[in-house]
Length: 191
Ligand SMILES: [Zn+2]
Image (cartoon, rainbow, N blue to C red; front, side):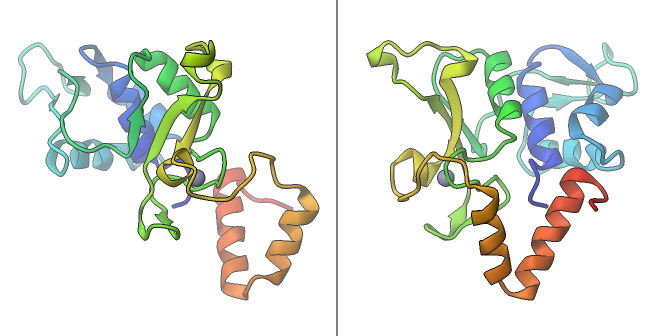
């Protein structure tokens, strides 16, 4: 539930393949290990978010198991893009950053405790374009809306093991179990 959701992965996969026919196998792979989930996610994008995803029911050009996102979907997405970046580059940055805010670690699907609203990710430059920053993988990262606006007082330094452990030890049992579930989901069985 905390991981880059399968829905977000499918969303990004479609966005990286606008106008191209994709297959159910590709969608299953894009969704990650959860094999049963991709079809439901595609249905949600079609029905709840009105994405123009065609199937063989909609178009004679498509065979069963083929899908086509015709054009850029309108409406809200949980990821906001810096203008002018290619879909491929955006997908690469999101994938590398694990669909996670690189400052506070929140991910779409989380509620932002600072705003009480669902997390939206922004994809932006580490070194600004106006300062000569390039549109390349090494100069791009994902931040949530609050961090993007500088609204949280968090350093970019990655937390150390001892700091993480100390926080987990201080937390309540319910929170500790939530961390364990998240680790299991991310890494499988951990010893
Ligand atoms: Zn953040």
